[in-house]
Length: 70
Image (cartoon, rainbow, N blue to C red; front, side):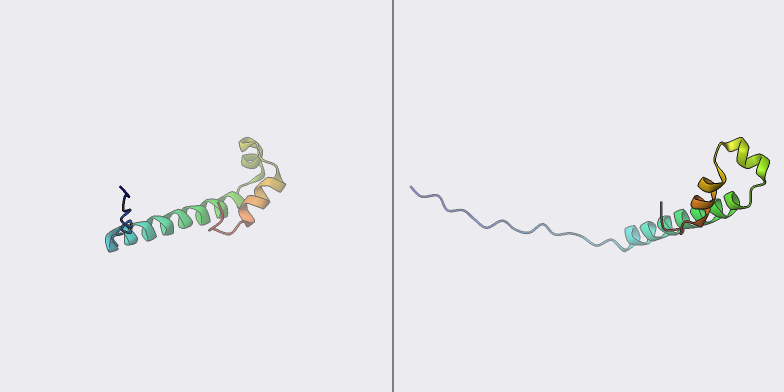
């Protein structure tokens, strides 16, 4: 007795405008945080740079990163 295989139905993905807005706002807030943190890091005086244990090269590399880069 042959078995018939019914085709699988594609799963319906529901679009949620609220979820999209929340995701976009969260991303923008994260980018803003990175931008501000990196700007402040680049402006630190020498004694604070030594205190956090990063070299000038590391600080320059981090402060030069674009805000969308983790």
